[in-house]
Length: 223
Ligand code: NI
Ligand code: MN
Figure 1 (spheres, helix red, strand yellow):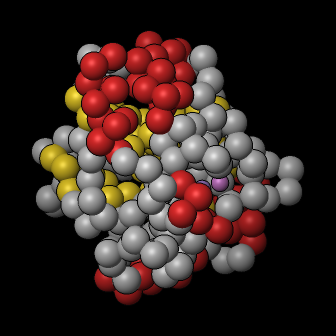
Figure 2 (cartoon, protein in one colour; figure 1 turned 120 degrees about the vertical axis):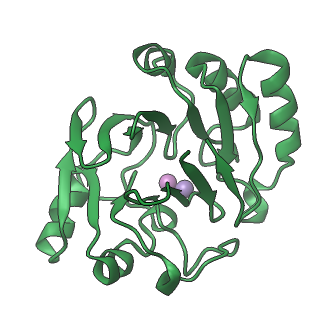
Figure 3 (tube, protein in one colour; figure 1 turned 90 degrees about the vertical axis):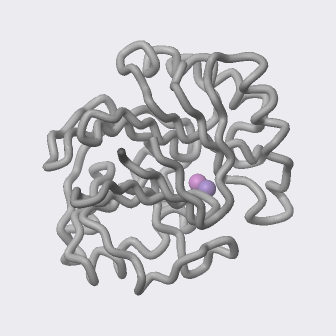
C-alpha cells in the first residue's frame, strides 16, 4: 500500500516499497515544522503547486541531488529547465502519463509566485491510488467536479485560513471531493495560521462521508 508522509506545512512524500517516490512542495530548510533535512530526501519526482517560497522551497537542491524530475506549471517548469533541471511542463486541465501513473493539473485560486503563471493543484494516479493535493487555494465550487471525475482515495487540503481556505471552507471542500480520507495541512507553521486541527477533523467526520486523519510532522499514513 502507498504511504503518505507529512513533513509539516505543505510538504508530503508519497512512496511505496520498491516503487517510484514523489514529493509535493518541498519546503524543508526554512520550514519550522520540518522533520527531515534536504540531504535525507530521496525522490524520483518533485511536484510544485506554485512558486511561493513556502512551496517551491528546496526543489532545486532536492532535484539536483536525486536527478529527480520536476513537474509543475509551464512557467515554473520552463524556468527550472532554463536553470538546468529536468522539468516537465503542464497546465491546468492537462494530464500527463508518468512511470508511476499520471498527473493532472487542477485549478487553484491563489497567486502563482512567478510572473505570468497560475497556482495549481494536482490529481495524481499513483499505481492506481488517486490522490488530490490542493496546493494553496480558496474554496471553489469546481472541487465538486474534481470529486466527480476521479474517485479519490485521499484529499490533501490546506486549512490554515488567511492565505488559503480556513476550516469551515475546507469542510465544504471535503464534502465536494468525497475522498475516502482527508488530511489537512498549511496550519500551525506560524502564529498567523495557528488552529486546532481536531476541530477540522470533527466537522469533516460530522458533515461528510470522509474520514479525517491528522498527521503530525514526520508521521505517515498508509493509504
Ligand atoms: Ni502560496
Ligand atoms: Mn503557502
